Image 1 (cartoon, rainbow, N blue to C red):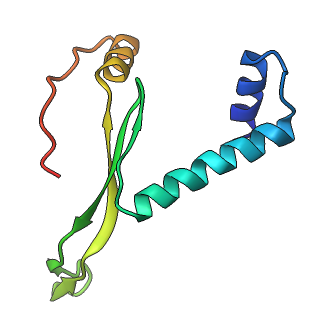
Image 2: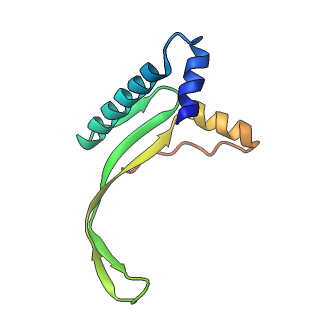
Length: 105
């Protein structure tokens, strides 16, 4: 994470101290976590959207014992990259951009 703070500081011309940048990033992360816990999506322009979702409880198989077990419901997040970000990644990898698809979550 130290590299992130240094990159921000270099881009801003060392306007902010590293300790202030660390505090600012910590506040942003805390705000994001609060929104996700409250089941609110987070949209970051030109990067993507982080959407919380509930994965239903279901039956699974213990890979060690081969017995059926119930996997309880749990919450997780899904990241859907913005088209601009997907194109950037594809250009870097010299790949075609996969077509957009509607999220089912």
